[in-house]
Length: 254
Image (cartoon, rainbow, N blue to C red):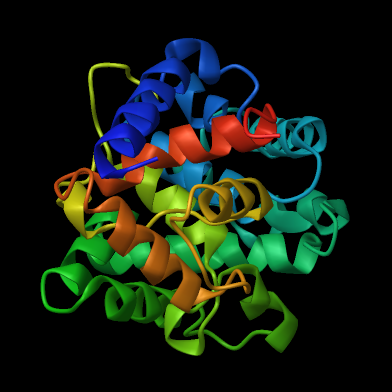
């Protein structure tokens, strides 16, 4: 396909998968249960952190977290005492355990105390720095309290060449906004700045379409893919995440 044909193909796939029907079976369905901005961004962040593995398990465990917080994540995070954390000691999602979970709760509470929201914190960093640096600074803020090194592995750092799939997915949810209503767009940051989430499905599709040559799914690959997607829409390149993921999951290019 030439450039024009590829754009038409990607745009068609984007429209096919960027639909409200997409929400139900996707991790983004968890924050869609809320209307308060604080509840949305906190539930989205917690869900994104555990978004690896089987989708059914991700949704089940993310829903369990919301139930344990009595479906009021912002209120729980802000008001929780040490005794309120005890039930979460038994929470497990793959390598993310109760200790990690409780640390993340406390870290979010600290960010809320200092900035008022996760969005305010991230916006502060990205207003003064390139996106990868802002992501790294946000991560430093999150892990600024003493914690086990293993806990820090649950959020990637682009400056250390991590692919940051879950981090970029969370940012897509918070920053992208269009009439389809899948992404929330509740953070006042330009969608042109964010990077495409890269996983096995999007990577395979991108390579088949000639959008990605690098073999590793690392930050260099994320930069290469996003730069190529900007050729098709420089204001909102990450909208094509829907196209690449949808085509990959459904095997459209086999």
